[in-house]
Length: 447
Image (cartoon, rainbow, N blue to C red):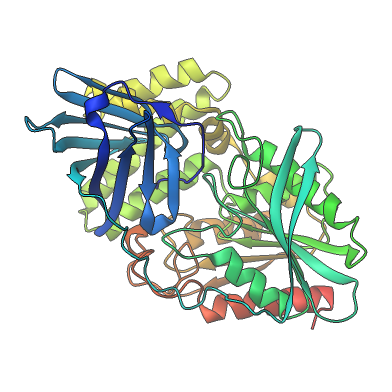
């Protein structure tokens, strides 16, 4: 999926491309609108309104021989399409990772963007607690991170939780398809007497830094810096600060503790307990099966994805070698040379090579703090049966809860396919909120 992050804009090479171009990707049966804005001053941006992703920098916009090309670096995606004779339509494909989807972009008249879908769980003021914009330093990385700290009413010091986002450049609310799950978590926990710090990822919103070389290990140092900041606050109990990570955040949290972060407890929401390569391979097969693929097609998907992941892992320290071997694997699987070449940009990146090769078992096994792991029974991205079972073997002291019917975002789901995420009104299932908040209150002595 497309990840939101503001960055320095590109310069369009063709002045006659100026305008707004609208289109939509079909993602798992759901339409995902996209907007390309080519400004008169040469700046170019992509917006994904349903994901609340706006102002993503577009680079390398060119038209050559009637073919339009551009890249969106933060989304690790690129477009290539044929421009119509009247210049009003670009017909081509959006490539992101190893996936390629048809995309037609049509010049649109100026006007207001449609309103986003209703999200009734998103908290709105006035709140029965204090909400403060804060910044804190990660001195080792030389960056300042920006976030929101919510503090309960009454006498402190209070226990606290630091929220860690999933993969991709996320804002402090982990906004996706206009859902703001971290805002909902912060509201639910703070009403129960738990202070909550949520912050923009590197390079997003008010946070500095953010490069293509950053990995989960780097994000773990941000988590440690967040805990260090909270320990300086007189309204926070320094002995009762924990980490709560969603998806990749469930990898970041154990890494932070293994590197010395003084967390008193940990919550993993759809947190990986096997290698990224194993997760991605199983994810691809589960998504294909849920989308209606035959048993043979699912098996072939698993085989091809496994070979691609093997190419990434064996070249985890060499991006060029990873790109070469991944491209060869994709071509052998039937992709065109051009499609394969576009796909390797993501698959050979430092983040991807780390994620695919990282085994979370050592950091998980070394934990000596209370751990709660919550999985959705319909999660196709971090499958519960694969990861809950592995975590039970690795960390037998962990409390593991599988909630039937929930997807990767902890929503009540039909199929669990990512295409449903934006169509579901619910941001977080009530049973997920109750499971997590009750557990944190129990282990910290909140209310």
